[in-house]
Amino acid sequence: MISISESAQSHFVKLLEKQPEGTHIRVFVVNPGTASAECGVSYCPPDSVEESDLQLPFHGFSAVVDAESQPFLVDAEIDFVTDQMGSQLTLKAPNAKVRKVSDNAPLRERVQYMIDAEINPQLANHGGNVSVVELNDAGVVVLQFGGGCNGCAQVDLTLKEGIEKELLNRFAGELTGVKDITEHQRGEHSYY
Image (cartoon, rainbow, N blue to C red; front, side, top):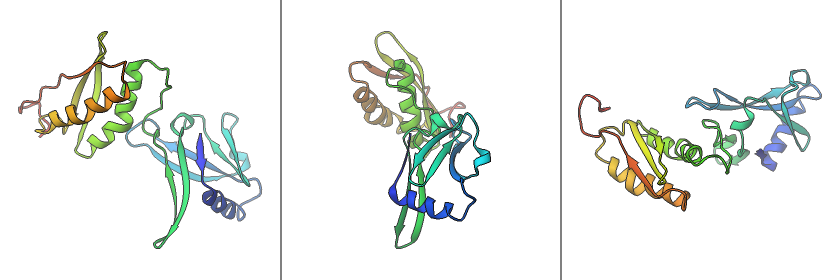
């Protein structure tokens, strides 16, 4: 579930030496599954471990994860990096904002997950987003753009050269096409 590098494990062991015996670390997500999700690490005294918590054993300590955060910390990585600027603990949790779906989930769920986890974070840099409206029996996924993408002059390029290519490549043999139903003409409905 969570990968903790050797350097991060050593860092945690040093920190925990100064805490009461039996203290572990807690890895958590605040507002999991939302655009405002934030990951964190804190001390976890032995009396703060809940029955529903998952305890992951590491060298010299356990990482404790609450039940709500667990699906959002799949594939999370914690590292401790030292460079010219100093030392820094990094936590990467690619599924914090969107719950990972299984490989055998329905196609629509897998497509929406890929859009939420990989495409929408890029579109968000420009104030945009996209969502699945429909997946028809012919294997065509119908998309709706929103935010900054609505009325954007580059939306055709984004769709054809970016999203469509990625979806058809990722879901080869399952998807046959991508269709946009967004009204992109400038007007009152446009974002800008």
